[in-house]
Image (cartoon, rainbow, N blue to C red):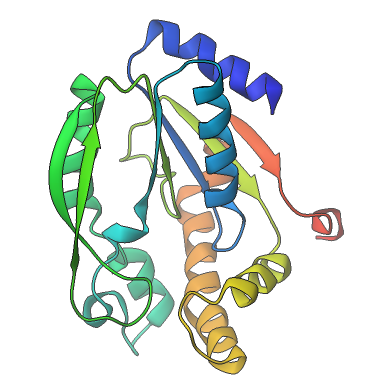
Length: 207
């Protein structure tokens, strides 16, 4: 981690804001590790911001489908165009943004809540979430969190943001989320796009 923080600090001297993406499969620990990185950068005096992208999910009626559920979620799960045009692009250009955005809930709410993004003089901006490593998305530095599906599911079960039964959660992960990740692996090869890889799974060497 120390080497990573030093690398990001050095890169931010030549590029402000430095746009960093943290990605991995659902349950890999992106948010937790992103928070650690963000805190470490702030401790050394860098004006760093962490943005989780789950608020940019589509509403359930748009992100889920009984027809080809994994492919549908991979292609329609997030409002990426809106997120990049209203949030990411302004940050890339100026390091400043002050907007009220519609945020979706990771559960099954069919309505948005309002979220206020207020970022000023960002030196490093970190976005964390799934599906971020694609050729069409431009970042200055990419960090991949490596984790097995088995461990990721156990973490998802422990947090259970959706508030559903274990059987329902397992069904969703086995029919939607993990197959969607496999499509992402095949089409985008995200791990190969990473500048830095963090292994966040004691069992990973078994896979």
